[in-house]
Length: 166
Image (cartoon, rainbow, N blue to C red; front, side, top):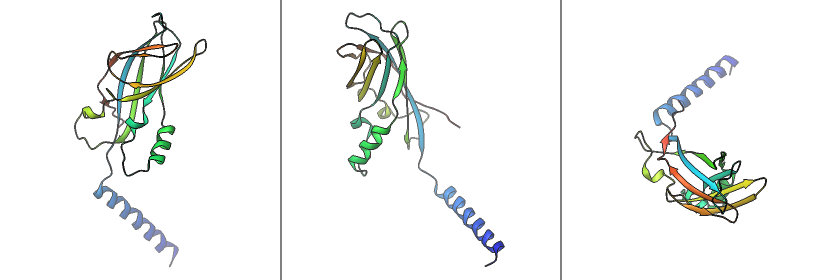
C-alpha cells in the first residue's frame, strides 16, 4: 500500500469516528454549583476569622453508581477535590460547591434531588492558633454543627444552579 493510500485510509477512519460520534451522541455531562453561607464561632459565640473551611459530600452521598465496586468508588471519593473557603473578620464565608457528572435533565435548573440539602457532608475546619477538626454532618439551613473548638452555623443554602461553560 502506498503512503498516500495509507493517509487516505487514516483520514477516512477519523471521519468515520467523527460521524459515528456525532450521530450516536455522548453522555450528557453538566456542572452545577451550590453555595453555602456559613458562620464560624468559638464556643462562646465569638466569630473566628481566618479559619479555613473545607467541605465535600460524604462518601454515602456522593457515590451512586451501583455497577462500580465500592473500593473503586471510595478511591474516587478520596481523590475528589474539597470545596474550600476562609472566614472573614466576622467569621462568615461562602463555600461554592461545584460538582460535574452525568445529568440527563433537559431543564434549565438541576433537579431538586441533586441538591446537597439534607444530605451528609464532611467538614474540616483549620486555623493556625486553634488547630484542625473534622466532622460528618447533615447539610441543612440553620443547622448548628458543634465541634470541640469550633461552632459552624449554616446561614443560607442556595438551590443548585447549572454553570454555563460554553
